[in-house]
Length: 165
Image (cartoon, rainbow, N blue to C red):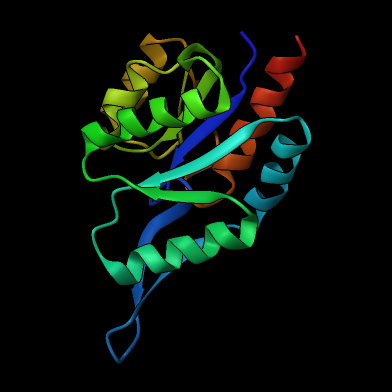
């Protein structure tokens, strides 16, 4: 199976999941510049990319949206954990790919519905035990890097190696 699409959660995967608050109450998120080269490598190989978030706060969503725009990746807001799977299916139809040809990078239980169905489930190293156990059971991949610390690039590079076989 060759991976044609990579979906990922945002907070805890693309970002560290940490919030930093300023003295005036604004908050910030931490992302890794390491992941950017991974996105470029995936695109060069024709792999579609999409970030899906359930971020409930407008400020948090706009921060994530800016990061994705800077990287040339679309960000979609899911209404619920269950909605993530329907978003994945919609984009796979659009890209003419099957769910067996897709990967999803996750850190938490909000992605379980997708991880149970996706062709290649991936967990970041600091994912919850429930997510890592599911990924192991399904023969997926667990990164050595943590979310927001280059885990997405590691996952993409692993996928690119797998696609060459």
